[in-house]
Length: 350
Image (cartoon, rainbow, N blue to C red; front, side, top):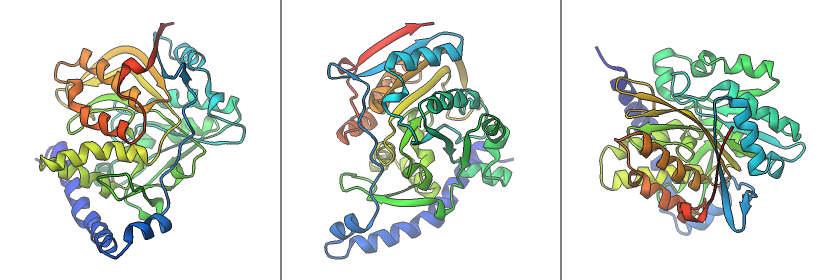
């Protein structure tokens, strides 16, 4: 009998080879044309440009860590300490919360929908129009024949509706749901097909989970934007990773490029429970640890640098050096700082 992991690998191969290479061939033909770079830059939409990080004090980005057991008090104190959502959310803004719903498993593998709704409440207070938007993995479709399965099993539609929050679950392989964007500074992906709903957002609040990851070593704020990209393209990078060498370099830098295509205004990591040893889905050998923390920052690189320290302290199979290539490249792209000495870290308990 095939294991869940074997099915997952098969799904990745099927879609990356059948669908993604078709796109690569077209891209290669285009790039071979004279002056193709200039033409592409003019004709292809650009990545989303997030608003400048307002959560800075004395030249240092702020990073707030709240420890406690009452999630509502933790979120309230964290947002208050960092300066509130009013610094990025203006009246009438379309604000999209990007959760982590790639796996078919429940919290803490994926986001806690009640936590998302709590964040949405603060957005509404500042006049924003809230949407929860994400896309599941193709494995979910292969096993359950329903691209909305993850949202349904986690009651995202039902709870979102009761809270007056729009919910969008994007099909991972429906090309109509994605827009190809181009950036000349990207080394690995000349263009990236991104979720059209997130691309048009006035504000994106990134709500990742902190987990061990089989390929990326750690998944958190940067890696969460794999869920904002067309499935065959993200799975292509996973296939290359398994080839090692340059393929691994491609994958680790692609994590940063996918995040750069979206540029969220704020990152709110739910680290009340973290997945260690094996991930990103709950499987044999996975260990869930209660550390009762929420991490908030406008700097996505600093967020992952700090969370890497947290994971390292709680998982002896992980070292921060494992994600150094991703952090360094994300810093090079201008997404933030990986040097926590340049970050003002505020740690509080409630």
